[in-house]
Length: 181
Image 1 (cartoon, rainbow, N blue to C red):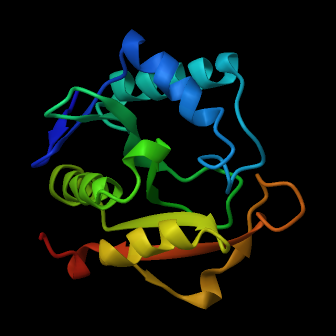
Image 2 (image 1 turned 135 degrees about the vertical axis):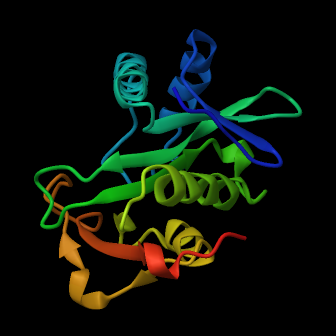
């Protein structure tokens, strides 16, 4: 199983000790603002189990993110195959952090580590990121890591209920434009 390390963060497999803070952050309406709703403890635990199973199976996926200095679990970042129901294919980068971790540059730092792994280890030709058109903070991270949006790729996410979260954007970073920072 791959672990990724940055100056401040460790992207690693999931531990039992991650489950309570993971459930707490997914019960926070502000963290889940761009999702259809909060998760129950059971739903959060099930998602962490799926993430860990994927990491165990293929060596990468949605890694748990830990602050190295404190050992604090702050969320997840990683890569995963685009869901089959989407109108495009590929591997997407994603992140979700606890509110206490916002504003420290952690999402950008962790996403850059995931990109480096995707391009250098997996030799992916492109990595993309998807979010609701209303999720301006995630789109800012996408731009900071070098991704660009083509409005022709905008779509209605079939996994979202009808409403303001359904219109979505796709940001892309082809391997040839990737620049390690």
